[in-house]
Length: 205
Ligand code: FES
Ligand code: FES
Picture 1 (cartoon, rainbow, N blue to C red):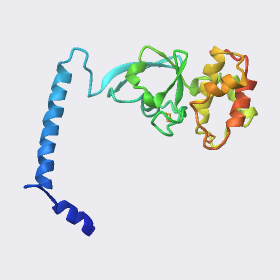
Picture 2: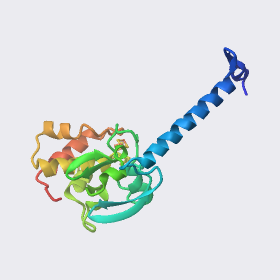
Picture 3: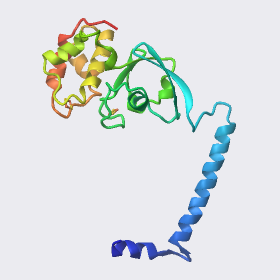
Picture 4: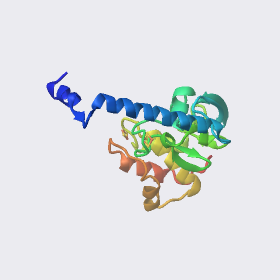
C-alpha cells in the first residue's frame, strides 16, 4: 500500500476514527435497506428483488423466463435468450446500438427493463430476414456501404425500418432526424443515410 493511502486511513474525524465512522454508516445503511426490503415485500404491487417469471414476445415468438426485475431488455435478450442481434456498446442510452422496435416505436433496449416490455411486440434485427433473403433495409445497408465494424448497424437498421414503416418516403432531413439517436464511430453516416433513402417504400412489418 502507498504511504499516502496509509496516512489517509489513519486520519480521524473528531473523536471518531474513520473505521468506526464507516462501521456506523454501514449499520445504518443495512438497517435502511432492511426496512426498504420489508416495505417492498409488504407493498401490494411490489415484485422482486429476486427472480420473477415473465413472458416476452420477440420477433413473433413467446419466451418464458425468470429474471430479476432490474434486468434490462437488452440483457434478457442477449444473456438469457441468446437473441444477440442488438449490440451493447454504451449501455447507457447514448449510442443506439441496442435499438429495438416495440409496438412500432424505437427504444434503447439497454434502457428499458425487460419486465416493462411484457405484453408488447418486440422486434430485433434477428427477425428481419426471411430465410436467406435479407430484409430490403439490410440489403440497402450492404449495397450502400452503410457499415464497417458493424457494431452500430443493427441499431441503425431497426431505426431505419421503424422510420420507413411510419413514413415510407422520407426526405433526407426527415431521415437524418429519425436516425439522430444512433451513432457510428466508424463514420459510415453517409452510407447509412444513402441506404435509408434507397430503401424508400419499404413497409414490410
Ligand atoms: S448500448 Fe444502448 S444506447 Fe448504447
Ligand atoms: S460501423 Fe463501426 S461503429 Fe458504425
